Length: 232
Image (cartoon, rainbow, N blue to C red):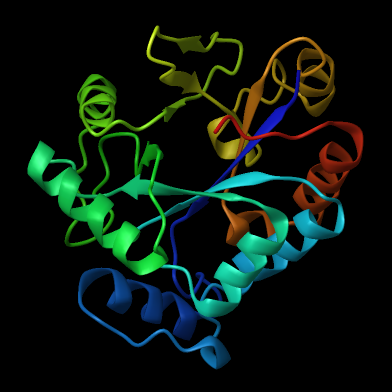
């Protein structure tokens, strides 16, 4: 089996230094142009270059404020990666469809995978609807003929499922960042062993991984040790 890499593209300008953090908030809640010289999706471009060098494939989930630039789209094409919707306004099926169509118009691609921005509780931006209601997203995705839902639970031992129509559900993920993982139970060695017999989702946020040399090394080790794949 293999590693399924999930990249949540949460921040258009990252979070460090403070100016880029402010630009991320401004872009999320109101509007700010997508200017690469100011660092738009800088960390994502670095991660994509790492993946492409190692011929590793990934799913990239974009918010309405992190739509991929031309440079990012080029890297995605080069690596044969898949684009997914990182659902932000999950208040209704209509708001889901609006975000899906926005991403499809921008990329020129059919969007077949969805994840949710936030796991409930905290509100991340003006358009963000905080509650985490995975049953709704799965039903909306099926209605829209999508093929994959990647959930936000933090126990990567939870098994995936696929229905008769070929709709895949991975309720949980191995969060590389330790704040969302039981680091004693779910170690990198655990992941290396489990991915030999099961598909395991590895979830990363580019700006967090690149800010921590330890996480960079763990990420590189996983890329060198495990096969990666996408499901559609």
